[in-house]
Amino acid sequence: MIALISLLLAAQAAQPAPLAAGPDQPEGLPPERLQRIQAALQEEKLDGWLFFDFRGSDPIATRVLGLSSRGPRSRRWYCYLPARGTPQKLLHAIEPHSLDGVPGQISTYASWRVRDRELGRILRGARRVAMQYSPRNEIPTVAKVDAGTLELVRSLGPEIVSSAEIVARIESVLTPEELATQAKAAEIIARLQEATAQEAARRIRDGHPATERELQEFASQQMQEAGLVDGGPLVAVDAHAADPHSTASDGVAGRNSLLLLDFTGRIDNGPHAIQGDLTRVYFLGEQTPDEIARIARIVFAARDAAIDLLRQRLEAKRPVTGAEVDDAARSVIARAGLADAFIHRTGHSIGLRAHGDGVNNDDFETHDARRHLESTCFSIEPGIYLPHRFGIRSEVDACILPGGKLEIRGGEAQREVPALLAPEMPAHSGRTP
Image (cartoon, rainbow, N blue to C red; front, side):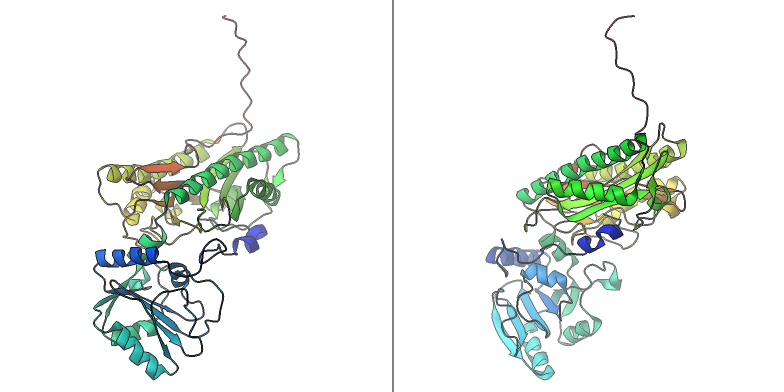
């Protein structure tokens, strides 16, 4: 989700999901995953993928290679996965078992001179090698290798290219079972958002409006009872909703307040449960004000423009990039004269973490020219933020299913901002006048 979890849940949200080896997943790189990586490298016409890490500097390497936190890794290590052939590991002499779960030949070094010699031997003949590098830092989530290491590898001969495409193919493509867990998480989140909004309305009717903190506590309890983990609720009222990263908790969800709910979570702690991530907005009054309704219509139209572009391209079997999806949504808001009020990307990759390693819908914060892939999930969440007044964001989860069909998760996308205190229509008597 765009917003960070509130201060109430910051400690919980800071805990990373078990992205590497877990209790149900053995540590290391299994043969089938290595085969997938090598097939992707061949298709991208790359000679190999070089991983480098120093004291956890590259979490992508940790995830791709299936490493846990067990064992010391205090020295620099290198792992080269060639497009064809046997992986090569270069480890410090005092930590020769650092990558025991990864297949391949082991070389050790103690001095930097031996390291350079051995690394040169491993890379001999390689012309194009992928690393966690992004030209101009366009995709910062991939840019994990320091400039000095890039200089060292370049000095040994290979051209270094970004691993961004390979990372997306290996880390963001989901199995049918994983796609199913995502659908379930989104379904639960949508139900709990509605319950939280109705709780806010109930408290107003009872004469005791809830604070943001109290609604966060209510939603957190509901999420816990539903079995959701690795996430939490963001609750933002009125002007706080104009801050996409609001951590406020003292706002009062009173009569005639705008209520924004942004929830994320997955159905269990296992290695195959995928995040749900949805945002909806409500009005805690009898009739939604014209200005809120107008801004919401623009946001909803921007969201739908992004969805329409995806569907059109997928049905035509034509590629669509994250940058193009962002442009489709952003152009709607720009035509309405509110370009400066849309201050974040249109969406992000979704995986075990709410913000995954796949394609982001972004041509604003970054230029993500990667193509969307089948069996992946991502958010579509344009927003308009009017400082000191209110903000509107509509977030849905979009999944490209096997075969290229686009599915929007979390129930029907919002078409209006509901007025939750509107008087109920009287029941029909059943008699003909």
